[in-house]
Amino acid sequence: PRPILLTRHGESRDNVRGRIGGDSGVSDTGEIYAKKLANFVEKRLKNERAASIWTSTLQRTIMTAGSIVGFPKIQWRALDEINAGVCDGMTYEEIKKNMPEESRKKDKLRYRYPRGESYLDVIQRLEPVIIELERQRAPVVVISHQAVLRALYAYFADRPLKEIPHIEMPLHTIIEIQMGVTGVQEKRYKLMD
Ligand code: G3H
Image (cartoon, rainbow, N blue to C red):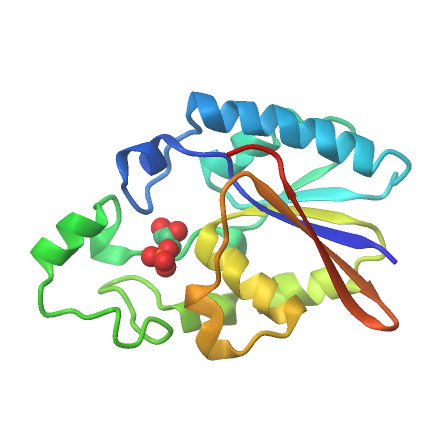
């Protein structure tokens, strides 16, 4: 059975500043994760010549893949982070201040950022990625973002729709999914804090 490895990008400079969205690069810590991830992937997929690395089109995932050598890399716009629309680049604090009437908490799954996306929108745009992942015979490393990985993980782990926006998706951790005849198995590798 071929594994699918899911991971968020290494810590970004916007993560450090508490800002959502944007297109910042990785921080020094994120860069360390990129190196550890490369090490892990090169060992784990040593004899897997057909394996590939999928990223979003955003700098933080491309930089996180940057240290991995020996595998083709494919960028998917569909793997880009949830579009926070008018809130892009804000902190959660600023969002609360600027948009007091908007309550994302009430229905985080359906809440659509003004001029942006909802979780349901993200789930919908992931469909071609999921079809392609299902079709792959070789391992795939998916380097993406919190909201997107929640949706992808929920699909493979068979978690209910309403849980998706609340699934824990820590930084600097690889979730390995194995699809076998008996069902889905999962392993986690926390490479750093
Ligand atoms: O930038 C967006 C965050 O990664 C998504 O997290 O949906 O919990 O706000 P959230």
